[in-house]
Length: 239
Image (cartoon, rainbow, N blue to C red; front, side):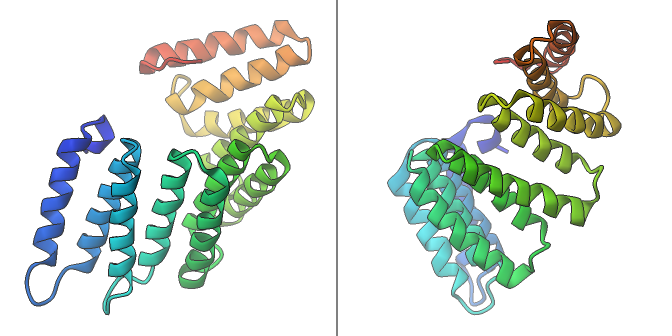
């Protein structure tokens, strides 16, 4: 909770104490240790304390090799290292770590585990940061298709994935393709949420931009207005 609100120093102290307690005794609680170490790594990454973050994730990988560690421990630690590399501004290296995490996750949990889709989505975003839009689209499409198969075609996660892919195509000025994806995303999210839910703010703005890119300001304006109402209702900014 402390890390979620930006109180990273307090979060790190709490995680450190949790790790100490979990490591004590004849039979350490490896699940709690793993969570504490990954939490410390995530918090340090957010603070750009990259050496500390790497140390915590390396400790998490060591815990993953211990007898009795959770089956997915390595996959979780590898994901943390991948995100660390994203924070450090090295998307190419991050993708290598994500590939390892994906392989490990599929091996222990199967190809249809929800975290497989999550990793693929993160890989899409990372490939985009690297400037490799075709590769980013491929990862995002795989993530969307997996969510469709596992969660169903009208699940909100499918809508979020379509928004992300639509945004990518929007930025590549493929406005008609973006509009189709974003229309589908908003239809799904509208079914799941009230009209001012925060998950609708950016898809609505993106769809407005797609229509504007197609020269249809008449349809774009009410979408921007609705996006703004959602943003105000949820204290969001940066549209």
